[in-house]
Length: 136
Image (cartoon, rainbow, N blue to C red; front, side, top):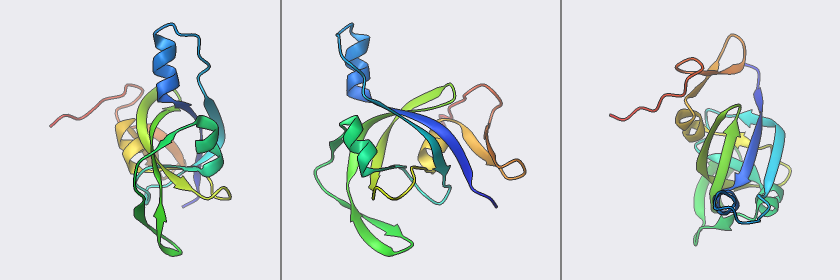
């Protein structure tokens, strides 16, 4: 299977929320044209440089993360507003080294109601063009 890449927009949720209250605030935003869809990854994962540019706040403790290089400690950050096409939601971000690509894991894929089409190597809405949330 080839790699599936998509363009994503990530915003600082706190900035966005304040802007909704008509406060004059610039919403920190990064556009990433080549984020890698990784169904073996759990979270939205961003290189440090994007986290810093967005001004995201770190959770108090690091977490153990299993990588191809073994188990390492990583920081988690809150308040990332992820948009893929016309679908947007807020997610926790796991920190990656700057040389790594941005990764879209299964939690954002499920929450945004996307799946990978193995024949076209593209993201497809699980329920067509309409985003549907499951509440069982």
